[in-house]
Image (cartoon, rainbow, N blue to C red; front, side, top):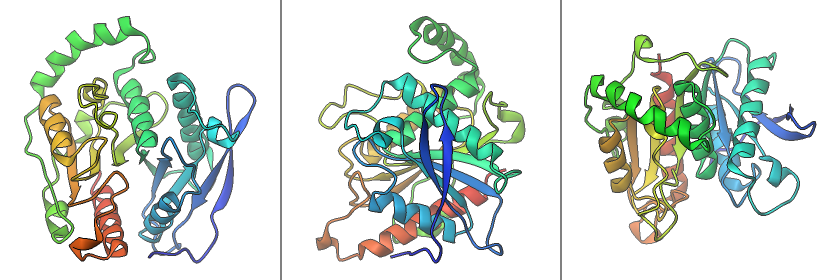
Length: 292
């Protein structure tokens, strides 16, 4: 399992209501730095100090990325129930702003995402910024966008979905989906977001495949990487594949065969979990390095 040689640096993040949340910045060695900041939001039930978050933050830092994690406001205050959507989005935007202003991160390209809910909120922020829309809770704004987006989608070329399994990392490295060019990418209102990384995207609640959380995804015009377990109860890899095809998303699908929502595979498969996580982090770092 990957370990950090230095402790992460605390980064205070000020919110609009006068409160603040805590960020943790995991930095690579000076020789390894790639000039990319990756912001990772945590899942609904556990904060940034959960072992999964620490493992991926430290592991991706060792692979050259400046990784910034943070607690959403409800988690920072010790509450169990997540804040309303608008408040979660506002917190994520504040973290983006803190990353942009941090003296050690200035000039970096920015990639956002997270584990489960953290990734979903990142996608909502990116959707708003790429589309230049009012908050997603504004149904009228969303409705007016749909007719406009269909015209945009028809102009996009259809793309084949790149998939990879743990034993075949090279496949993920060479078969990315819909590599977008600079001319395809809109300037965002809060930051120039180069891409998004989802560690187990929560496409729907477990057992409720009809309650999809995908309506906003076509608004995102920058590359996306879906890292999905094949047996994820929140959306299997096949369901993610279908979503990418349905919306013609500029996305790459990286499949962890046998993986659940935390990318864990059954021990009966005989593959060490540490190795699975390490291979997944290799694939994420490789994908990010290819972003233009």
